[in-house]
Image 1: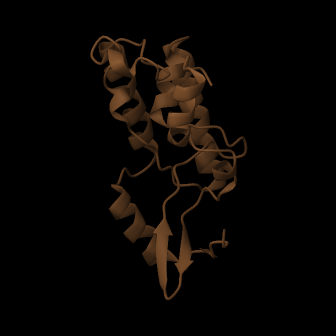
Image 2: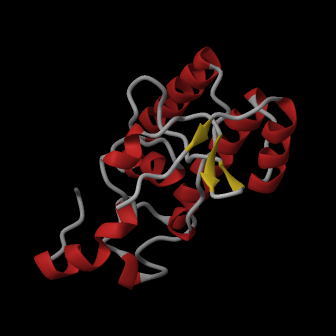
Length: 160
């Protein structure tokens, strides 16, 4: 939404940002039934109830206005995750660690105007907040963990 791209550039990159439909998927892990097989999906968490993104790139974007506001946004999201018993699965992108000064070609991404030193401080503080409230795992560890606790809900893909 905030990228200043031409119509042609937007078309080329539209798959990068996902669509509205993806926002309607469950926030908790689930499985897809694929014939005889099942595939466990660990969804990228959006803020429970409000379904707005909370991965680090959005934290970086908010920090262009205020670092304190960005960390408050994360605190609220983590509180809502605890309240709704959602185990957050948050993305880290390469653009969360570099700025437009490092990689000018990626300056169209939101938050790329934030200097690298500031991004690193925000990521560090964010990881401290997350790890003080949740056990931080790899996606593989998370999938094994949820698979061992309970039967996951199963979704059957619709034919297109």
